Image (cartoon, rainbow, N blue to C red; front, side, top):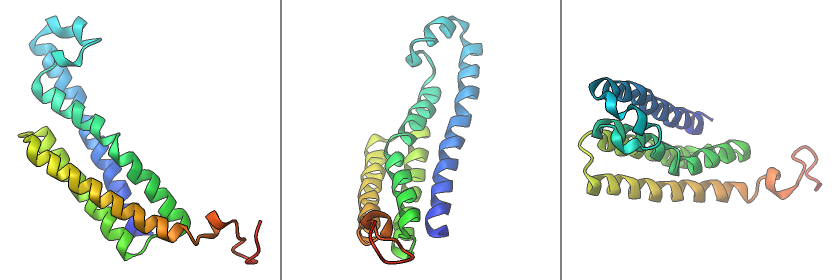
Length: 151
């Protein structure tokens, strides 16, 4: 189970770490330029580049990783928690960390894209492993795991 659960927790942790930087950055921006207070209510573009990097990175952690979370939950339910699923899960999370670091620091779009694309490919591999395990799962076949009978 740890092959799936731990990377899922690390991904959640990454999302929270990025989130925790947003208020401090925005407060710093508002103190530096109080005139942005009112426009900031409707327009995030008034914040500094640093603030926008963290906000954009946080939003990004709520996009593709959603498919990872769903896959992890399904993997736990159908028992797809072996080495192959674990390697894909850890690789995905590692690539998301790389993507986030690039995003909130020097933000090279080309490098960020390669990290993103590699993460997508890894996530597809993860889902293939989970789907192959799920196809025979009593959870999806309707077979009672205690009796071996349907429905």
